[in-house]
Amino acid sequence: MDDPQPPASGPGYPQPSYPSGAPAPGVPSPRRGRATVWLPAVAVVVVVLVVAGFVVVHAATRHAKPGQSAASTGPRPTPHDSSPLIAIGDGSALLAHVVPPPAGAHEEIVEGATDGVFTADQYANTYFDDVSTAKTELGDYGFVTAADRTWDTASDVVDAGVLQFRDTNGAAGWFEDQRRAFVGDPDAAEQLISGTPDAVRFEFAKPDANGYREDVLLAFQTNLVVVIFIDSAKIHRDADVALLRQQLVDLAKPL
Image 1: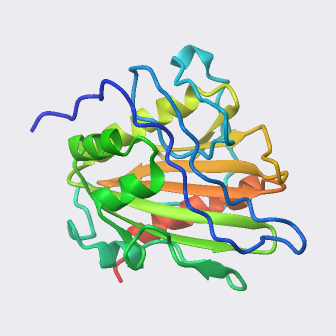
Image 2 (image 1 turned 135 degrees about the horizontal axis):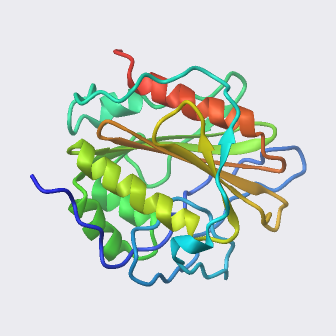
């Protein structure tokens, strides 16, 4: 089977639907509506909250900031295996492998999903403004299902999701296109995660109206793509990287 071809244009940045609970006493939650994004023809764009009214241009990679290596924290995932552990299309099994909230966190209902599991239509409708293009591109890369858990703590809001594709080529293609899209955003600083293949994080410099900044972590493993949003008043890099690593480890564990 031929590798998936990069799409002619992207559907825009996905926008997670955050819970309404406040992450800290007296501080409004960083819940934000989906902002409209227009992109020229380069690649699919993924996972970053866009401040309302801010139009993101999907620039070429020459605008990227220099990448840095993240600190070595948390469990180390095993190297890629060519055989996916989770059965294709088993959304419940996929959800069971999504990293759980920490003790003391308040888990929220995942908006737009069915008990935390997404079809392609649900995922596109929940996360994208350009729903039609999103559905097409998810199909082109062989998207099968996705699972998500969302929670808030006293200091942050987390949206942890895993997308399943039919094969490793589709997952790798989606991951690389999303990475290029983030690199093209001048507000996002890319950081390579040392010791963890095919994993990066993007720290956004500009806070939102509530003073929250965003950390987006992106990785792929076998036929799965991990996307984690963390919004907080102060970004905790090591803890965020540890969460991503734990998610990769959990994906490789039998239930």
